[in-house]
Image (cartoon, rainbow, N blue to C red; front, side, top):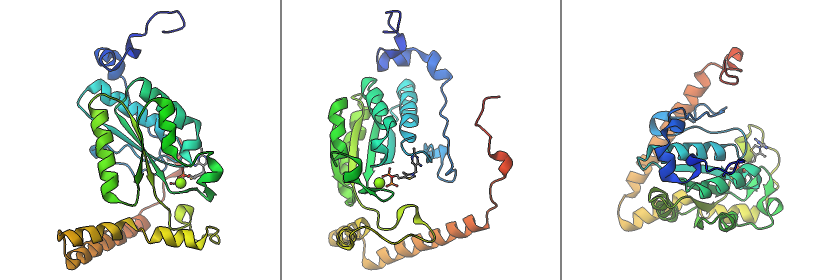
Length: 258
Ligand SMILES: Cc1ncc(C[n+]2csc(CCOP(=O)(O)OP(=O)(O)O)c2C)c(N)n1
Ligand SMILES: [Mg+2]
């Protein structure tokens, strides 16, 4: 209901919103994006966001667009444990649940926001526990287990695609190095045994062992993949270093409507 007590037709539900195509025809997604290289509209990747928590409302907009278009697209929104302490997290989960948006919220809980441990940011360290307040499934996955993440994501995507609305998936994982990969990182303050225990659960090594055990790949084939990845990374770094800095005159582009 709006403030006059009449029903707003485009807030009645997914079907009503699809009927009300007026709003979808002028809908656009804007990404305020300092990480413009992390963007690929052709494959549906809307970009990274420099504001912690800022991506969640944008993702809800993308999910609303998908719902209006009705082609079965599902939005997957990635964020950190730090973002779950921001207001946008709660606003996004609230509206996504209310409107049954086709979206999967994926919290990569790497135990730290910069150097703030998750227990000093949150009274309860399981981010997935927030889901209950918004009447959506909240699932904890082993974020260092490729197959567990694959299975839990599949369930959430199927739910979203089936019209049952959002899910919150929390992937427990860890950041091995200092926040933001600084060229000159400050001294490490996290407990060495904590770092060692997570390194022992390296998701890439675990998955390699899994495919070796199954006989899907040989050790030589895995080595070849490592070689290709190293080459790709070297080429990407060389490309970045050879690229010009942005032109300062582009600083205000897309900031204001003309
Ligand atoms: C609103 C806002 N506050 C603070 C910052 C500075 N900042 C950048 S990254 C970061 C930590 C983010 O932690 P988390 O959400 O857990 O993501 P992670 O880097 O661990 O994946 C902070 C505080 C920011 N970019 N935006
Ligand atoms: Mg984090």
